[in-house]
Length: 280
Image (cartoon, rainbow, N blue to C red):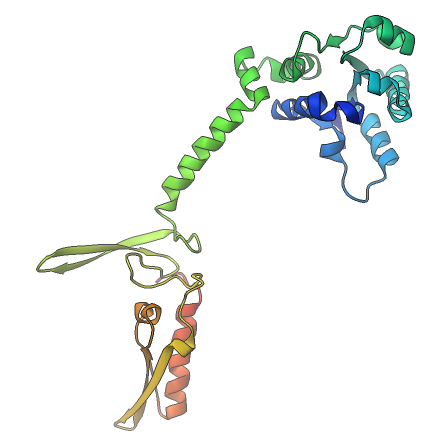
C-alpha cells in the first residue's frame, strides 16, 4: 500500500501534537502512515514501519527532545534518509520544542533542511503547510479558510449535523423497528371525522395498529387462544388474541378438511405475519 506521508515521532509527543496533526491531515485527504491508523493487533512493528517508509513519498519527522533520545525513532530516521538518498523521497522536518542548534548537534543533515517550527504554528497550521507541499492538488482545491475548517474538524462536524437532520427527516418515512420504507396512508371515514395512519412495507401500521415483525414485543403464539368449529364438512381454526399486542395483529384464521389442517393453516398465517414480507 502506498502513502503520501510517513510520520515519525516519539510517543511522548503523540497526544499534545502528533495525533491532532495526523487527524487534520487525514481530514484534508492526505494518505498518512501513522501508527494509530496503520497498525493492527498482531502486526510486526518493524515490518510495518519498513513497509510504511518504503511506500511513502514523504517522511515527516517530528523532532523533539523525546525524539532525539530514542533509538526507535533513530531507526525510522535512518530508513527515511536512505530512501531520500536512493529513491528521491523527501523528508519534511518539524521542530517541536527544540532549537536549530539542538537539531544541528543531533543531525547536521536534518538541521540543514527547511523545517516547520511548532513554536509559531499549531497542529492545524502545520497540516496546511504540509498539505501544500505533499498534495498541492488538494491545497488548490479550496480557499485556505475552507481548508482550515476542514483541518480543524469544523466542516466535518457541520456535515454530520446536516446528516443527522436528514436522518431525522427520513425517519418519518421509515419503520422505527426495521427501517422498511413508508408505503401508503390508510384512511377510515366515520361520523366524527377521518382517521389516518401510515403503513410500511414490513406490515407495520402506526398509531396503535398492526405491529412490526421486528418489534421485540411482537406477539408470540401463546398470546392467542385457539378455537375450532366445524361447518359443512370443513374445519375453521381461530387464533383469538389474549393480549393488547396480539389484538393489534388481529384474529388469525385457517381452514381445512380436518381439525389438524385448520390449525396448521392458522399457524401458517401467523408465521406469514411474523416474517418481514413486503406488503402486497
